[in-house]
Length: 284
Image (tube, rainbow, N blue to C red; front, side, top):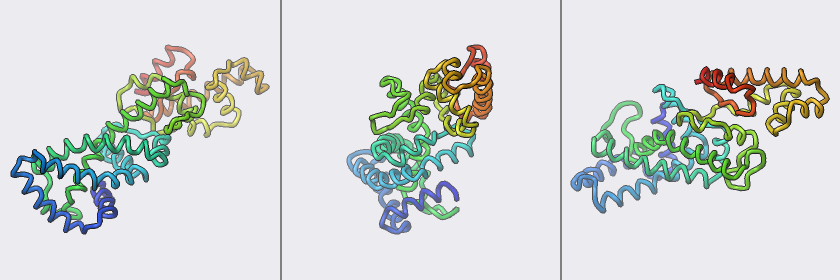
């Protein structure tokens, strides 16, 4: 299903009026607003109504993952690098506070592009005949909000990282509404913040770890917790060479994921600076 159709269906499921009636009303409204060049008190009232109608739709799309999925699809179709971390998808599904923070920012940015494209440049056409026909202004506006989601989400995700760093919550449950798991917190302590804004994870670090043998999982988790190779070997009753071999194999799995741009490798799992720089350059 095309992204435009999914947006239209989400709007239709939320707003009470029939789409055709909304389009006719919107066309009359645009003619009135054009008399004042889309400025002044009348346009402010229109914007407020547009936001009022759109907010529950965007909240629902963010809660069920539709907003992120459509944004990802659009970016992939146009070759724009963008990823959404699974932990963030889970958070946005459960936290109304997190959803509202993103939705408000998306809507404010979307208003600017909506006004320019739909109204000033006249790209909204109530007589459009292609696909499923014309969309109402609310659907067109939400479509613009979908485009804004990439930048808003990336900024929001980085703020979560900065917050975690300031409060030193990398290895323990967070008390905020934004609960940051320990292993994800480890990823956030790396230097991926210096990377372009599109470097947001699609594969969870723990997903890759869970694919490894139990012995490897135990070794890596103890490494994450700051134990030395000697301490790990003594605790797990293993040879020191076994510990190093297991860590080496797991690093290879991470580097393979990094080369595919699916994950950024935590600093604690690097052995030498030279290796890190070469492998991260290869990942880029």
